[in-house]
Image 1 (cartoon, rainbow, N blue to C red):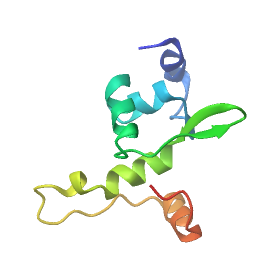
Image 2 (cartoon, rainbow, N blue to C red):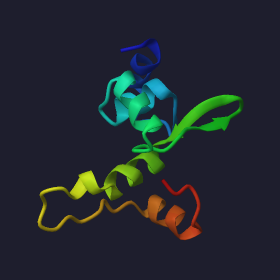
Image 3 (cartoon, rainbow, N blue to C red):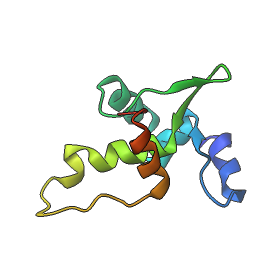
Length: 96
């Protein structure tokens, strides 16, 4: 993994806004897989933040949790409960 991923080892958790390399690692994909998933619309596009392309960790989580693949083969799936993500949902922006 790249230098930026190694720098995360000392953090208590992942940053809220992730680089493409960090976002790929966060969702468990290679960089190529992540880029293809974004291009195909399976994952949200990044957003410019201070001139840098970044992905919201919460938006990625919500997108994956709500995707049809998340519940494939499951009789009943409960979405992850995240009070911050729920608050963002209520604000009705950053939809995947």
